[in-house]
View 1 (tube, each protein chain N blue to C red):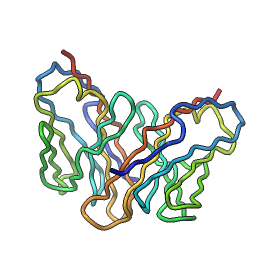
View 2: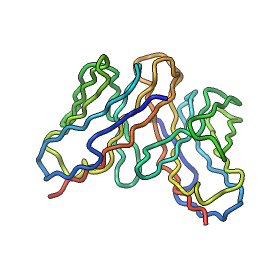
View 3: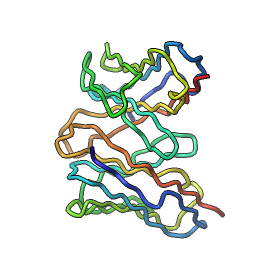
View 4: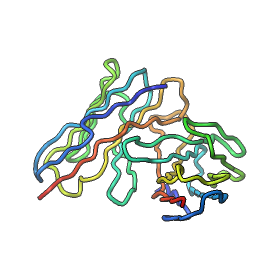
Length: 110
Length: 115
């Protein structure tokens, strides 16, 4: 099956710092999403981004489908950004089945 | 907003018990999914369903079954609970195919402990 690898696995930032999270995937995909899981376990969809670049406030994401990777940028980080960030993909021809990466655990400190 | 509601936030069951985890969505989504989440392994798909009475195995179906008698409800069944099924279980729903955004929405999870 498709492999989805995220890096780094863990990240600690000071409030106000910027960071880049990476997602590599092993096959062609027609759907890529980034999720944030807050400390209470709720998963929130951040971006649907199978290709190109999108921005939403302090967050932005870029997917280069031909090179099979996606990046999530967090600027001016805040303590509320803490949690786990997941990349998830749907294999081309794979229906609606999302395959998740193992996540990046982010902690933002004051 | 789509709501996906899981019936229990925390659950403790004994080894060998039959366990039912319930999930209900209120936006007429065709697709529903059950994942389990374990540290270091991310979310892994157990079963999913594209329609009423339809089910397909995900990546780790062993020891589980599902039921979808109504469009809005998708139940996960642990036929005989074992300690290695202690985990966080997450239900999700989405629109069926097409369009530019499948719009997955997740429930808040059920943390199951099997003792």
